Length: 304
Image (cartoon, rainbow, N blue to C red):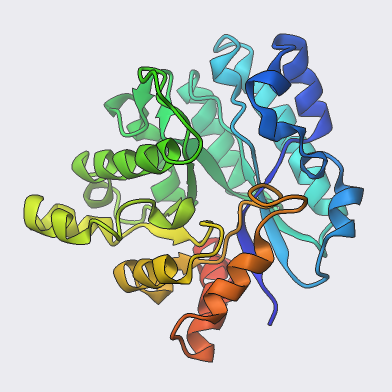
């Protein structure tokens, strides 16, 4: 069965070179970026199954964390152009790209979103759980959600560490950050204010399915309902029981095949482990096809 991997990552060479000139210690700060398949598309092709098309987003090295609001839009636009070029040159392997936006320059972020709306190769933007030390649901950033909702462009939501915490770790912290960001998005009424909002959450919705009853009993009913508006991927390194809980909570039509490739399991990611886990779920062939391909096409607006 053909598949679309909705949450795969890159760190393309020109952008990486630009960022290294700003912060030479990037590889020490983020050891996972040393995976060669993030940059070398020839090596990536060596591990390609010949069928799965990936939707690419950059790893979380964001210009606004390193440069001024005057410089960050240029870096984002250059990175987006490089991403468009890679997608265009590898259409068999890559379905589309997800744009980077400069969250310390919201006027330019809105302009980039408008440009994406007419792009052939970019289909949405990536946001992170926090930006500039604030929750992504902060009032300051509402214009970003409003613009994406109005133009029908999805948002890919990826976690980052909360720098206020002294004990961040890669095993659990990102899942907490995603969960907290989802709560903040719901409590900020973003879904009710922007009904066309489409947000794809990494790592299968993090802690939300496991704590569904806490959400149901503690939060107001309208907020509990809003949690079901999120789309989620399947990038939890397998674990069919957890994925079954995810599908039960969000519904088959809001779960999208995503793997975090090429990260997670060396050398090329966890794709096969996640495929095996989905195949073990008590789903019909129609439901599996929805998760593997159809849902992603609907979300990015390429389903007839």
